[in-house]
Amino acid sequence: MSDFEFFFSFYGLILGLSVAEIASGIARTVHERGEVKVGWLTPMLAVFISLDVAGFWVVAWQDWRRIDFDFGILVVGMVMAMTYYVAASVVFPRDFSGWASLNEHFWARRRVVFGIILSINLMSLAGTVWAWQAADRAYPFPMNAISWSYFVLVTLACVVPKGRWMYLILGLLILYFLNWLPQLNPLQAAVDAKM
Image 1 (tube, helix red, strand yellow):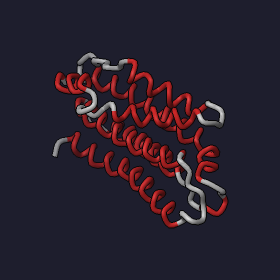
Image 2: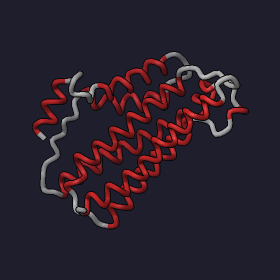
Image 3: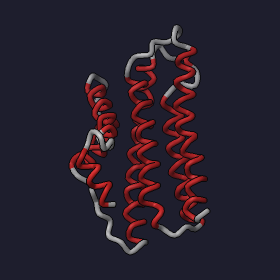
C-alpha cells in the first residue's frame, strides 16, 4: 500500500460517513413520511450534497496523489472530510416533530449547509493547486465558466431570499455534476483523457 492509498483509505472512510448520513436522513424521512410534508428542497439538497461528496472524492483521487504524504496532509484531509460530515448531518432533521415540513427545515439550515460546502470547496481548490505546485507541476486550471458557476451558485444559495429561485439554483447545481459525466460532456472527456 502506498502512502497515498493509506491516506485515501482514511480520508475515504470519513468522507463516506457523509454519504451514510444522507442515506440515514432519507431513511428517517421514509419512516416519518406521513408525519411531515416532504417537499422538494431537502431531497434536492440531499442529491446535491451526495453528488458534491462524490465530486470531492474524485478530485482528491485525481489531484492529491501527487503530493508527499505526511501527518499534516492527514490532518487537513480529516478536517475537510469531517466538515463535509457536519454539512451532511444538517440536511435532514434529527427529530421531525419540530418541523411542519422539510422545506421549513431547509430554510432554517440552508445557510449553514451551503456556507460549509462553499468553504470546504474553496479549501479544496487551494489544496489542489498547492498539491500540483508541491509536485513541481503547474496546475492546468481547467476551470471554465461552468466550473466557476459552481462557486457562484453555492454563494447564491447562501444569500438568495426565501422563494422559488432556490429550486432553480439547486437544479443547476445538480446539473453541474451531471456535466461531469463524459457521456453528457465530450469536452470533459477530452480534458480527462489529457490528464
